[in-house]
Image (cartoon, rainbow, N blue to C red; front, side, top):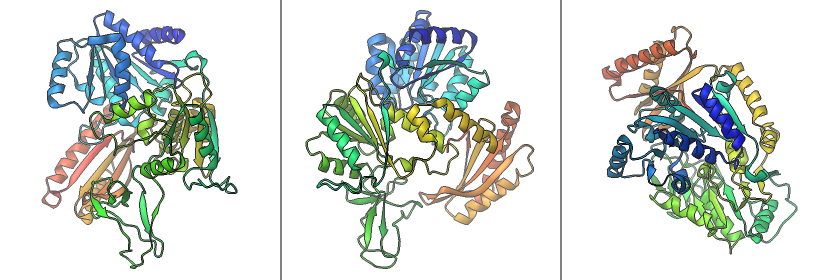
Length: 536
């Protein structure tokens, strides 16, 4: 840590932005604290950005020990009055350190000296809706430029774009390659489905492989904690008629309905509509409806059946809606009042607990098959970050990945925490197919309550840019979720060179043409949404 800190100090003298790549559990937060202390002693303010509100609870406790009343916290779960109070204190420099999510960028800083962007790879830094649609990491670099401040980007699994900027000598680079106190990285075990099909016990499970059950039992015997990950909430992601294959869909959105057991209803996760459970197929009339796959609620139910004495908690969108709900769950985990924590992506957001000895990923294949050019980057980051939750004390920890196919080289890179090999493979793929960072992307969404008008608007817009120099158009096509809240969605993707002046003129023209089209009576009820540098 001391060596890395000295390198970081030196790096920031020559560059405005430094990327700190440190293994999970290597002690990056202490480096941030020491660096912030230096800038505070010079009379500067510092901004510490986190991707999720869930993270603020834990890190506030740590930072308060160092900065006391000089620390202010800012995020969207505060009331309007609370936010106004924080705004005034930042303006008057009563707060020297601000810890916040992406909205903290808009506070009225006075003599900003340093911005720390922790977990810089996280997709949560991107604002999707409502406007302004910005990426907090990139906006932080622009804000720092205005204030002549420095930026530290930190992550165990940096984004491909940030690593590319290091390669291009735009960013300085510092690496922490060992865990604090030389604690070992967890062992990664790949567990193909049905490999233990010959083993049948009274507690046989269709969700948990036998080896995973045994590993959980052993972990609990050792008075250690377990994390189980599944990136689907609810009880069952969809129902299907076993006679004709019909699946219930939301009337307002083109997505299948998810069964939630606590409400005994089918939920739409896009518009929040609820429907009664289907016992009879509406297409063929057969009473052959079955629930398929599983979400966090079903995993929780199965875990309680398999481990009846264990204290089990669930952490997903459904259990963390209250203002203090996340803090309550994390507090129980921290004080070992929870043995097994089941959850979605919330679990990978940099949480630091010393007693987690086992992490189980219940369906790793789902992370690998999504129509997105960043799918392998996201899977690599998520699985490495999940593995990093385990073994943050002196004990050897275990990470078990359940899946059907482990042939992809991604899994060997994850097992070895080999970011370099992953990056070299991924950057070559991006270059070959001309994806960022070798180009810039703009996604334009067209929405209307009539499908034909949404498509007509998208096609008319695309026709106006077909002859635009240096521009490559893809689409328009129906969005992955083609209908949301009774609005049909079509998308047009634009690839263009990373030339700053040319990019600005293009964006102005896109805005001008969109306003011109929406002013026409034919498209008066339509929506056009322009998203620069989209993540998906």
